[in-house]
Amino acid sequence: MTAVSLNRHKIILTRWDGTLYAFSAECPHASADFSKGWISRYKVTCPDHQYCWDVRNGRILWPDDENYRLKKYPVKVEDGIVKVKIE
Ligand code: FES
Image 1: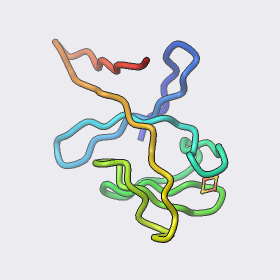
Image 2: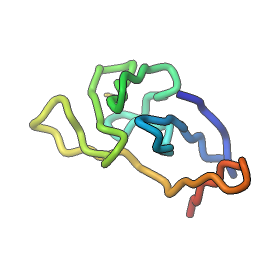
Image 3: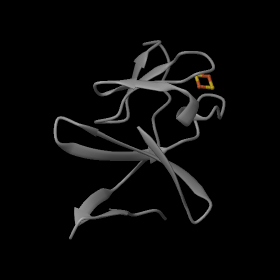
Image 4: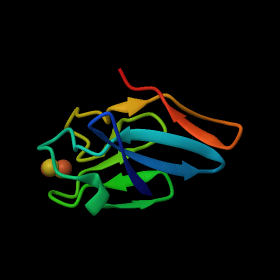
C-alpha cells in the first residue's frame, strides 16, 4: 500500500493479484487516513474503527450492515508510469 498526493487528493495505490487499484486515502466513514491503516490481500482496514473494504469493488466487508463505499479512481500503467484519473 502506497500513499501519493495528486492535485491535493491523497490516493492509496495497491496491487492485488496483478491488478493495480487506486482509492481515496480518506475513509468514507469518518475521514480517517487509510495510509495509517493496513491491507491484507484485497481487504483494506481503517485505523480508526477497523471497518474493512474490498479494494476490487469498493464495497464494505465489515460491518456488513453499513453501506459506505471506497472512493475508487481509474488507474493504469503506461510505459512504466502509473496514471490515475481523478475528477
Ligand atoms: S473513520 Fe474509518 S472506519 Fe471510522
